[in-house]
Image 1 (cartoon, rainbow, N blue to C red):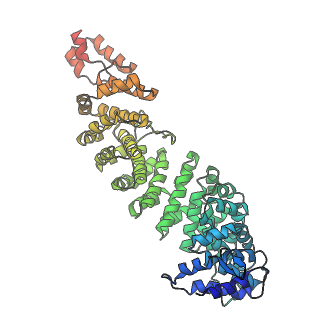
Image 2: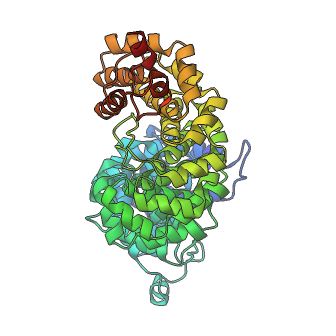
Image 3: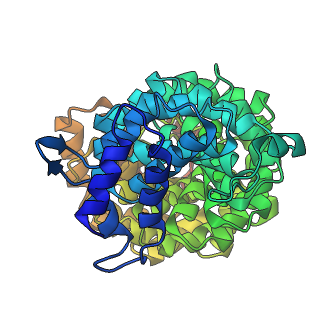
Length: 550
């Protein structure tokens, strides 16, 4: 493309507005549209050339055609003219970061948002598509778009209908054809590009964005549109106040429908992510479960091809399986098999979530999301512990306690404690997988969280399976525990070390019930040898042969 053509176009596109501007805009758009996809004369090269600095007879055009095109949007009112200019802006910016930066610097945020108000469907489409591209410039530009009313105007375009009457009023532009519902898809894409900004999350409920995204998600639109809507909702509901608003807007049925039926894994993944975010609010877990979300979430664990799909599906299940009713559903669905299969993943986030599901589902009670230490209860959900036993999951969990990734091995230790507490079968499998050795080595960790979880797991496997206790003693756990008891700065770690030392027989028992039971045996006057073989409740640390020695 010759510089002469570009300079001619620059003259026609420069202010004041000239009748020749429409022809020049269409010519520039065609330069891009008709260029080869790649190569030295391809679209990318043409776009770069259009954004270069030009000078002629003392007149300088910094940024080539980009600033003049942006300036024209504020003054062009004629329908064919503004349609040509908006089309040209889209093609010049698309897939060209340098030109996007030039447009941002020329004030494109406000001008493009204002174009969304134009009555022309073509202008609305091109303005929305250009906003989506402009948003890639960075947070500052996205904030400028939002501050200019971008969320409200994009929502208005997304909520509009391409009825026969609307298409008839639009008329036909042979040079710029319009396909029904293109503008709504472009608006949904633009909303998605803005939705991770705090300003977007704060205004999404007030300007009706959440409601409109839900409507589009549940409509008969294209797969691409539903992908963008699900993705936007996923980002927007990371703001807690938007979670219930989406449910109140009727968002759960379309999210579950997309999760279940969409041909797009990305759409299913984003729907799972949105459900995960909503399930972080404990009161919302009941409606999320009742919407039928759990079966398709397990299905996505099984059928998903990408790590992100597995991460979001297990993330949602991890939140839900804190609730007792959801544990029963997990059992009915046979979810253990599909979730445990993900323990072979190489993605740390997938492993963290999958281990979280396997651990949390075995615990009666809710895990505090802010805590890094497992909260075990006096009872466990045995049915799911049995599933872990039946599918021989414990060896894989034990293997992950040796992971180099602290997040992974910490969650693996939590899962091991939950799976083995009061479960001799799983504790025996832990012994076969050398779990005691792995856990004793973690007592040397620099993290109090890891140490606390390792001690919880040691208590669980030692109490449920005697050989583990003997192995812990043989490996020198007592010395490490005494050091922790005497020198750790964490009260939790010191208390757990004392409990474990008591169980290993190093310190007297702190368990009043166990001590009372032991005293009962002594009062009865049974022989010491018989007392020594009697099983008493947890945390009996007195060694009976020591009493004999006394």
